[in-house]
Image 1 (cartoon, helix red, strand yellow):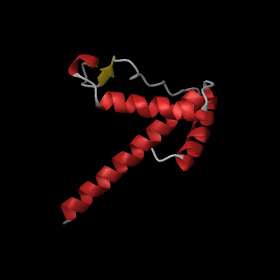
Image 2 (cartoon, helix red, strand yellow):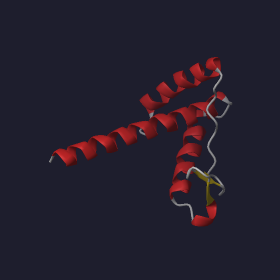
Image 3 (tube, rainbow, N blue to C red):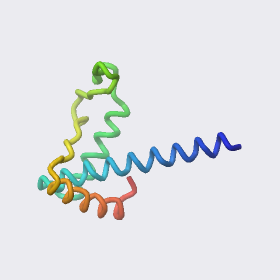
Image 4 (cartoon, helix red, strand yellow):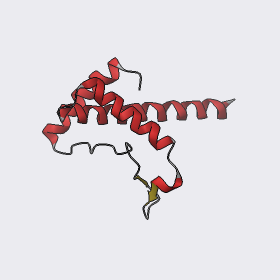
Length: 101
């Protein structure tokens, strides 16, 4: 029973981290001028495309991290500049409140 609870907790944490990452990516697109609903659609479709990617659409780097090369699979780079990052974080909070990611 304890193992099952531990696994459930890990799965929930993973889902929360993934939702956080998606919200940052959506917020980045919004910051770049893309309308909110379109940004949500772009990111969710990119994740679906990545989940369905064939072996010919994925290249792994020397550390084993995937790089997706198929159409509609690219994700925006989240800004590292502190001011831009703060804006993205604020938008991402709003996105997490509005959408079930």
